[in-house]
Image 1 (tube, one colour):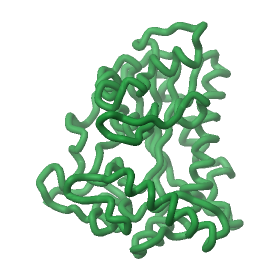
Image 2: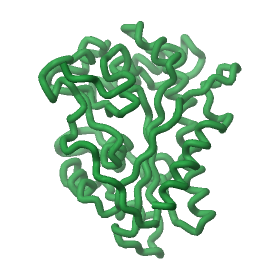
Image 3: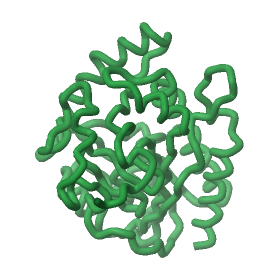
Image 4: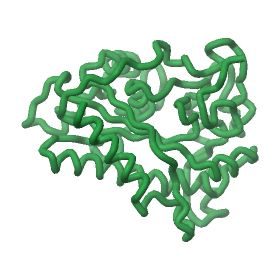
Length: 283
């Protein structure tokens, strides 16, 4: 795990020191707090189960590595997936927590400019690994092969999910609204890189993909349901089509008119809820 420990340090240092970790308000205010970092083995059977569940188009680590490096074959057990979670700042969460219809400016900025930093972070990770002679690819944040598809079971889905990857890396479980509940809460963004070095990550601290959501564990909470201005969350789960329509047809024009830039971030279901900044305590 020497390479993994070194890499985790590189990620934390870049988030801490990079001037690009910014909301771009002209004040130097950061977009993200200190990240969480986790790892998963390339041969972890969870990736194959995700592919089977989501659709044949969904990549395992071996799939995207082979597509990216066709002349450099690697066995799944020789690959490692590094995943990181970028927690929203206290100020951003506070701003969004008290709103009910549209996102705050800080949240909109974190979704646009903070995600641009996330892409730079992925590039930094890939570059540092390649400097050590380790082939690496950022599946959704750096690969031109990444895209959206139609899942037979779930509708709109991507070829690589950062949240599902973070779940595989032991960083969180899913809530009723499909957000990932992590030790830093649900108000987050994720990123990942697949790299050609072996590792032995620790076992995930959960066995169920809903383990840290109060609604699924004991039937309480459901606070994210009334937080959604689009009515896209119910006891049956998250209506992705309705959510997406709200983001593109309502939030994007709103942020363009109000803040002067277009952002597709809402985040109301991620704030003002018990899992906003932590794993919620059971009642």
